[in-house]
Length: 220
Image 1 (tube, rainbow, N blue to C red):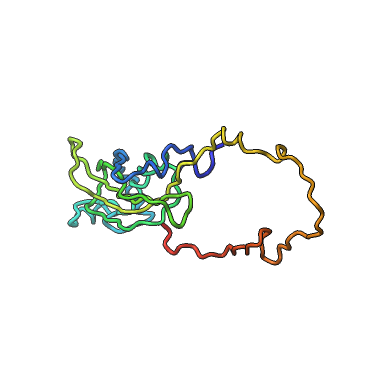
Image 2: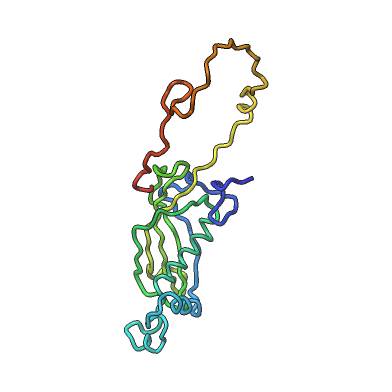
């Protein structure tokens, strides 16, 4: 059975882990085409400013026509990120983003090339078993010849990814003796009683540690 830590962001078995996301890696997230109806429907629901939803006013403005809501554009980025990377990687939650910039207007029919670059990676200090990966995402408008014309979106953010699970060595597992393998030894009755757990002490004489240690303030 695949454990939750070994599942991708979409729930399937993961094939990429923290160790695979090394600085300098670029992941192609494909090309998305901006659909006019979807673009306007999103704006009407979430960002109904006139230059997103009123074609007449937008045509008379410096925009020369409707432009996409920036949040629609970043949603297109997120979908590409999920489809082409998180669907394969052992992704956990994200602690947040540092930058989100809309660098040029996006319009219906635009074809946007999407990619993500790994800028840094280190084990998480707040989440054992996870690593923090620093990423830069970009979207570039393509021209008729499929060459990038202009960068329209850039974002910097961090993601948590599970470290690769370590499988137990079958040979080592066989070498570990079980209780059934141990010879029985008669113990003299010394009259001592078992340690009282209410005293807060452990059976070997060391005090038990409390479980209330504060969590690191920065969730890396």
